[in-house]
Image (cartoon, rainbow, N blue to C red; front, side, top):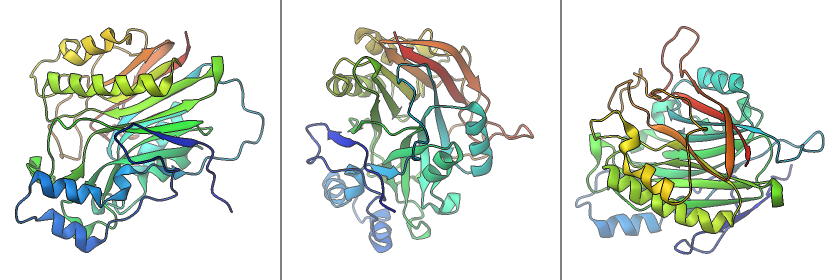
Length: 342
């Protein structure tokens, strides 16, 4: 069976020449990952050299989209879109059930493991896409180096899943506001950095650009605002005037000690570039005390947001990331909204 390649890849100017999406990310040999995990002297030069030798940090992976059984409806119809930080996807069946129940047309996902010992070496992108009857595009934020010998692949990814394939996709790597290789937090040595993945669905008056993003947690509001400004500038070039919906873990207010996240400078930057959020998000926190304690635990922050330009939203919701017994399956809840071009 021939794998689908239904769209082109567009790169920002600082990336190497465009290449088509790939059926699997190019792996890094286990012994190389083990050496990088314990460098004699972790330096910026070593990091640059190492990242230059990891092709997957410049690749977009493809999980095949289902073949259409009938003509696709007009793209301008309302689409139900979700965004969720899955916290590595430790609880696969419960996570799949939550997404199936949400009945989403497009899902913007962050923190997905592929080939990690901590999540049973699973391909969590493929799992969650298949569970929804979706295909997916995905790319790694990081090559995880902690416990490298235990990981078959070591990818930690963001993804966009959808019922129908996008026409174009772009990988946008964001400016570093923390260095997880030279100064790893909580022992999490990694190669790579925060990134966004954007896709265009439909064309002409029916076009919509969606973007999955994960902004830096280990910085302040100014750092996140700088990352968002960089992202919005590049989305302008990619969207070329089409409506845009951004969704993901913006880490709004992270590390600031405040729960009024709208004071985070990233919102001023969004307004400056014509984005809004008022009709796209339900009120209340999106964080949750998790059973997996890989990060600061609390349940009063709203880290997760939709930002839109040229779109209108209805029925925003926050869906509890819990299993049938009420136990947490992530430290973030799933957010959802129905959108269409304004």
